[in-house]
Each structure stands twice: as structure tokens, then as C-alpha cells.
Length: 239
View 1 (spheres, rainbow, N blue to C red):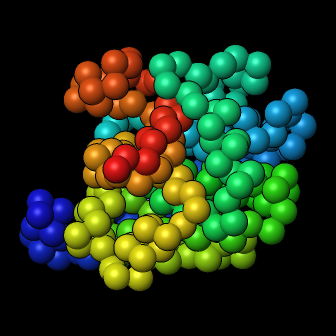
View 2 (view 1 turned 90 degrees about the vertical axis):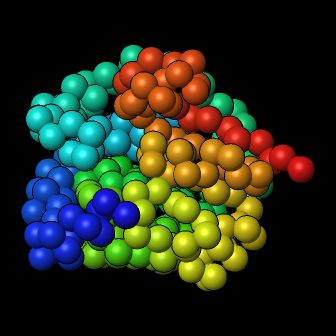
């Protein structure tokens, strides 16, 4: 794959390491404010979902000129505005969450992981002792989240962290570990973050909730949405 060729060409296992570290530092600083906004929201779960998706703005692989600090502030100032455009299947999400005992959450980017942490904390506060498994990339690939990022964020304190085994910018099941594939198959609920995971899993037959910000023309055309739209898409189980 092109990412592996880049690693070999420049002699670095993690070419985006410094960018990811910066994203993590910025998100860590914003985390307390985000947490407070969710806690005092009229609907904490809805706010946590919205902010978790909006955190996808920290994606240098799509837009390297982005000013992350300013973009995060813009998102956080939209307190009473709706992020919901296009598909936003929140009622189905709540129902599945209530009934699920074990939940698999597929992480996306570094930095964004702090917003996922708020979502996990909110789920545990509202729904009690759910078993949550947080899956990360098996090896560094662009700015996608790895075990190292999860540990820095403290996700391991509130969820079980596992590598998917995939070193692609998405979750391609045929290159994932057997452990991950079994969890993916058996979990009561799968929550998938980001466009890369959506593109690699949208044709899967199992029930999945996709949380993403639309960033490219292909996905825009596929879903019938606009760039920048925030999506909570319910992928129903297919026989």
C-alpha cells in the first residue's frame, strides 16, 4: 500500500507522529470544556454524539492547512445549533445502546480520540456498566489512532483497548486479526467513527452505526449529502 511505501522511503515507521502528538495535545486542552458542555447539556448523549463526530475535524490527512484550535472553538460555540444534516439516526442509536451489553467502538484519528472519550464516559454515566471495547489501528497509518494514542488519552481506564490488526486507513476485515473479527461479529453494537471506517465497512451485512463528517465528493455523492455534513447513519443488518 502507498502508506507502507512512504514509510520505507522516508525511513520512519510513523511519519505522522509529530502531527498526531500535536492533535492530541490540542484536544487534551479542549477536553475539560467539551466534557462540561456535555454534562450540562439538556441531552448529554446527543451532545456527546455530536461532539464526538465533530471531533473528526482534526484530520490532517484531508486538510493539512486546517487551524485545529479555531475549528474546535467554532464547533464548541454551536451549543444550541443542530449539527444534524442529512442522515442522523439518533433514535435508533439510543435504542441499540439501551439494549446492548457489549459495544465495539472503532476509533478514527488521533486528537479526535479525546472526543470519543467523552462519548464513552457519557454512555457509562447514563447506561451503567456497559462493556466497551475501543479498537485502534494495528500499526501507524497517516494520523489514525493507535494504542499509543489511546494510552495517552486514558481510554484504557474506561474501555478495553485492542488493535484491529489492520494497518490500512480504515477497517478492512480480511486483514484484521482473528480476535478483532470475532469481536466485530459478536458485539451487540458496533459504532464506527470516521470516513475511512465508513468506506471500508459500508457494505458489511451486520448492523453498524456510522459516525462521520463527510469530507470527499465520493461519499457526498454516495449518501446524497454535502461536504461538512455530520452523519449518524444506521446501517441495518442485511441477510
